[in-house]
Length: 145
Image 1 (tube, one colour):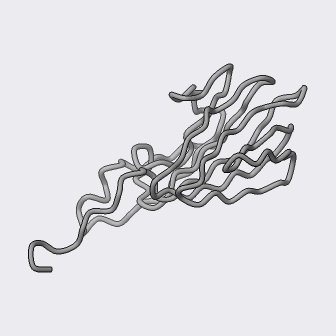
Image 2: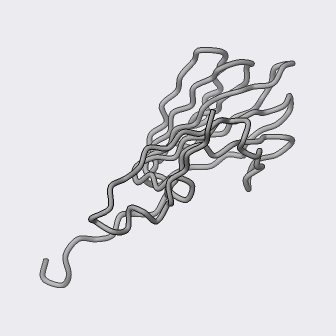
Image 3: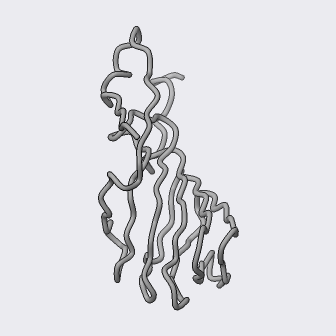
């Protein structure tokens, strides 16, 4: 399959038309992001930097047994974890949940969460996040608004 990747800055000009992007996971590198430990790896699939997406970030994650992402919370981001294979413990606001293949969890902003691969096989899951960054929205209007 041919990889077609749009220039991520193509959307800066209002007259330009966004382009569809096709990616093959085999062409992407595994990354261990900050706060992830013990072979908790992810591949960024659709992100603003890679394809110019404005509303979401889509990744696939692969955690080896014992790997985890430490406890954290998002100010404005919503997340969906969709488990494809393996099993692990997802801790949501202190509640431990065993999750495995075909389980989907929605995590709203303000909910503290962490994810551990507790099984004997690799835990593989999709992470869909919106918006792509956890920045607080800018206040609208100025003085007197």
